[in-house]
Image (cartoon, rainbow, N blue to C red; front, top):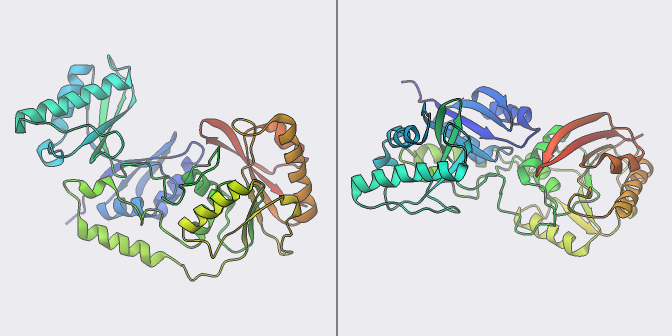
Length: 379
């Protein structure tokens, strides 16, 4: 008997679509196609569960449930009511929320469109049960996603509930935190796999180092959280437990790793990073020091520097930051000869102060800021 195929969309950080698609393929997804800020794919149920537990790059995984022609509010209302056997999927005892992307005829405002979807569902519930579900924008039992475009609507369910970038270890963050899934994607682009030392001279909350170490040890990011899909009408608990066991078996917690070191000038931010490292269960793998990166002594063996220094959009001022980048360039050239440096830049004028020439420049969006993930071979 053929396994049912799920058509789905992975919502990804802008600039990491190809890397996200490669991760989907590695975890068993089929017919993967990179899109803008997303990738479409097909998966059987086991693979769909696996992606929730093990994929590092998506924000969300949306399971397509129905598509229908939509030329206005009335089409939307009827289409939503007929999209699913809602008596199985949304009992009045369950809460729900509606997220909307795109626009269509007469449906140009996402709040109005979401209200139409909500009205269609609660009116149907009242017909069936005489009562309706409540709306919960934060922890809904059923998370509905509607995408409008080209006179058609696609209704999907969000399997995660909350964004997948939230791993659960980062209660403490700095003033301009790098999202966990973006950090994971940046590390994947470096090719680091735990074979050479890894140092972040401006580590902030420690996110790059935590995601790198988790990747090297194959620690599944979704093992310690709950998912909305566990409440779906067709949820298969036995198959889910098989994928949980698979994710646990892939972990390499006993693997030996080289030096993984973060440095943070602000003692309070350094302590935040240590708190995050402990929460991620990696205190025996990652060392966080507070003080000047200029004083760091690096191993002689070549390694990798990774860095997301402030670039003036949210932290720091002009002259102070120019000095920081100048010092960072001097540190790399004097202390890290033979190493590689990967640096996330949102300000080309500041990276000029490094006085180094990048060999690769990868466009990345970081919280809406147009950035470049820059690679330098340090001579």
